[in-house]
Length: 591
Image (cartoon, rainbow, N blue to C red):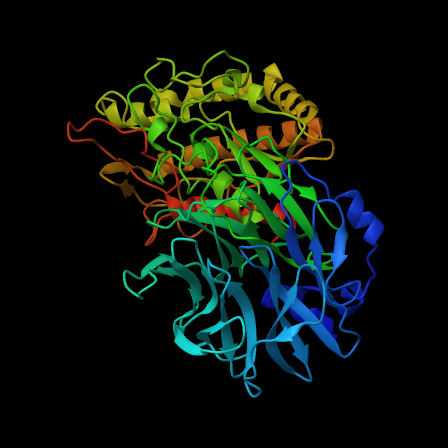
C-alpha cells in the first residue's frame, strides 16, 4: 500500500486496495455536501486529494496541509477552542505529532521522539495539552499514552493504552488490549488516574469518542467473523453497548460527536471507497448523509462543552446503511425453548417467547441487519392476517398484530416458520403425554388419522402459497425470502424406545412423528417453490443430535412446578437454533 493509506485503521489496511485509495476526490463535490443541518466545523484527513489535513467550516473546505508525495498527514484532532488542529505526520516510516492553525500557516512539530512512531493525538479541554500514544512497532500491543504541552514541552508518560481522549470534565477514555487476549477494551479513568472502569470487551473495540455531556463513549467495534465494523455507544457508568450503525458489507469507523449531537464517521459501503458521513443522533428517522466524496478519513469535531443536553430518547439505533430483515411465524421462529426471552414476550399477557437465540435473530445479527422480530409462539397461518395473535391458552397476546402488517419495502430478507400449529403438532405431543395408555397404547393410535387430515387441509387450502406470495409482494424487490421447514425429533428408523425428559416414545411413534414432520415439510417446500421463494430444508438439521442422543439439540418434556406441560417442551434449544441459522446462512451463500 502507498504511504497515504496509513491513515486508515487496521481494518481498512486489510480491506482497501491501493488502487481504491489513490482515486482522486473533487473539492466541488465535497462543497456540495458541506452544509448540513446544525452544522459544526470538523477537520478530516483528505487522503485522496493531497494526503493532507482539511477543515470543513460548514461554508467551504479549507485545505490546511498539503505535504506532497513523500509525506502524509492524517489523524487530525480539532482543538476545543477551534484554533488549531493536531495531527500525525508520517515521514520516512516515522511519525510525529504536529499542529497547524485553522487559519492556515506552517505546521509546528510538537514531538521529536524519532525512534518511536506516534499517533492518535487529542486535545485537553483547555486546548493547551495534547494526548497521544507511541508505538515501538506495529505489533506492539502495549502502546504508551503520553501527554505534552502544545509547544512541545513537558512530555509525560501517562500509562498504557491507545487512542486516548479527554472530556471537558477531565476524564480520559482509551482503548486497551490485554496481553494474549483476543479482545480490545474501552476504558475510562478520572483525571487523577483513579476510578478506572472497563466499559467493553469486544473483539476489536477502539477509537473512543466522548459525548458532549461526558456521559457516553462512542467507539467502533470490529467483528472478526464478518470482517465488518460498526459504531456503538455505551454509558460511562457501564452497561450494554447500543449499536448505532449497521454496515453488513463494509466498515463504519472513527466516530466523532459535535456539541449539537451530530456524529461524523467514516463509512465504506463495500470495504473500499471511504467517505465521511454525518448523522444527527436525536431521531431514529434521521438518515446519515455523505459529507465528503471518497478517500476521506478521521473526521474530528471540536469536543463538546456539555452545553447541549442529549436528545430525548438517546441512544437511538441509527445508520443509513442498515438493512432490515423480518422474522415471522410461530415458536420455531421465535426461539421457543432457547430461553432468554425478551421481557415483554414472557409475561402472562404475552407468551410469544422471542429469544435472542432464535435462528432468525442469529441470521440477522450475522448479516448486520436490523430485525423486525414478530414470530410468536403459538402462531398459525391466519395470525399473519388477524388483528391479534393468540397465545397457547387462546387469549390475545398484548401488543401483537397481524404479522403481515410489519412488512414494508425496506425489508431485504424475510425468514418464516409457520404451519406446525396448523397441523396441531404441539397439541398432539401434549395430548400424547396426557393420554390414557390403556386405551391408546400409542400416540399414533390416538392422533394418526387427525394429523393426516390436518396436514392434508394445509395442502389443499393453498394457504401457504398465498401467504408466501403476499409476503413477497410486501418486501423490497429482489428480497430473499427463506421458508424454514421443521426438524425431525428422532433419529432415522429408530428401533428402541426414547425417554425424552420423562416422556417415553415407542419406536413406532418416533417413526410416525418423524414421518408426519416430513410430510408437512414436503408441503412447505412445494408451496415455497410455487410462490417463487426459497425453502430451507431443516428436516435433518439435528442429525446426530435428536432427542435421546448424547447431546440433543432439542428439549424433551419440560414440566412446571405443578407438573403441568410447558410450552418450551419439544422445541429446539440454543444449539438447535444455531444449527438452523447455519442452514439459513448457507442459503444466502454465507458459510
